[in-house]
Amino acid sequence: MFFIRQQLRKIDWLARFYRKHFTSLPFDRSEEGIRRQQQLELSQLVSSETCDSESPRLLLLVMDIEQTEHDLIVQSIRSIIKQNYQHWRLLLKGTQTEQYSKGDNRIYHFDDCDVLFTKEAIVNLDDENSPFIATIDAGDLLNPFALQAMYQFITPTADVIYSDHDVIDGTKRHSPCFKPQWNRDLFFSTDYMANLTFFSIRLFQSDKENSFDWLTCWEKLTTGYRRCLHGLKQNSVLNIQHLPYLLYHQRIVKKKHAEHIIEDRKALTDFLATHATSVEQGLLATSHKINWLIPKPEPLVSIIIPTYNGKALVQQCIESVYQTTQYTNFEILLIDNQSDDQAACDYFHTLAKNNQVRLLSYPQPFNYSAINNFAVEHAKGSILVLLNNDIEVISPDWLTEIVANVSREDIGCVGAMLYYPNDTVQHAGVVLGLGRCAGHSHKHYPRGSNGYMNRLKLVQNYSAVTAACLGIRKTLYQQVGGLNDTDLTVAFNDVDLCIKVEQAGYRNLWSPYIELYHHESISRGSENTSAKRKRAKAEINYMQNTWQLDTIVDPAYHPLLTIEREDFTI
Image (cartoon, rainbow, N blue to C red; front, side):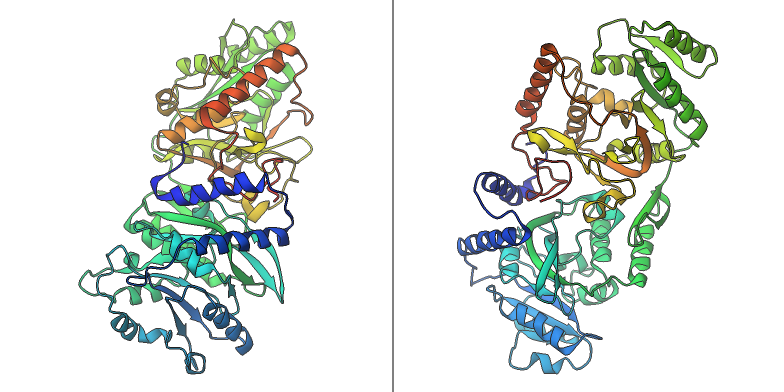
């Protein structure tokens, strides 16, 4: 499958294993049922492999015990001691740590790391068996299989590995966070990896002749977010792996300190100094919004709007573009596909006469892909925006955000937050595999909702976005062959385009800052003739056969989230 990378083979195998068994075996689909199933899976996985006693990988855990109740500290330490993987060391930071290290020579004071490394005889931190280190907040708990699972899934080339987590309140666990695979732009928006993220110590070794330089670097990089940014600064293609199990249980009282978020934002600002004008607070207090640089002179954008009749829709669309949009360097190509309503035709010609649009005629039978490909040939802009005629612009910055993100050399297609007229979500990114083909993220969520893991408020990478509003560089559109006007004349051509763009080495992106209304009927979608049904079935078959969408696990999704609905539920 197109998105499988060499370093994620084992994780993807797990995802396919989940999909195969969790959709065919009867089991309790409640949160508690999934926890029991995961524990069974983990016990089977860890029993299938044993630790190499001659060269086990050392896993280091750092716990700051300042300002934490004694009982909570004891609970955390007990969850570490009970791990079935025993080659770990716990480094306690703070005062009065001696009382917790008595009787177990694997527990050290953080300041004694030099002694620890001398004792462990670890000299070369560049070898493939170098230690990995993570933090655990005092009061939080580890799954009994956490360290064994991490040990088994850390590959020789791994740099970072993170797991899923849930919240523990007293003895009750809830709110599981089933995370996507490495999602670079989601990470730029927030520290979604959060708890139990292991880093290779190689990332913090600045002096190859001194094995202990990592200690100063680690203390300076207070949060996991800054540690990951530090690693990305060293190597933009870090091998970051996701282990899709609930291995960490977060104490409900834990909140990320405001000063940590501010410092994370400063670190992100420094990291993007040559690529962004600023980094500010996003739609959430804990999120970041990046204002990416726009090339100078500002690129011309060609907005392509196909239509058949639809005077009222086109008028609403065109007027909203001109009245609301702050970015001014654009042209509108209105493609008339055999309109036969005289009022509509007269209106289109009036628009062209007033230089509000360039009116092009496409006198062939309806073929959405062919119409847009035809328009691209006539587009003067270096950036294309495919726009449905039933779109209404509601955010002044919508085109600025598209241009800024499309101009990034590693970004392919850029998609928008689209609402139905009743202020519910119509599109917030496309997830491959939904309905055994592809579907929209968070469909019908109320406008203003945070969504699953706050994802409705965060810029992130999705495998695809809808062409109802889609931005892309013209050169890239042409490079991948544009929309498929042979096999996908009506539906899924945008998904196919996005997959081809991702195959070419680019990331597709969705942004909540690009807001528009999509005046598509909520009940729309039924194919009311035998010919339409036959065409729709053929297009679905094409997507399934070409991209394996009936079995795929989207890297922006999680194998334990539903493929039967578009609501991010379990």
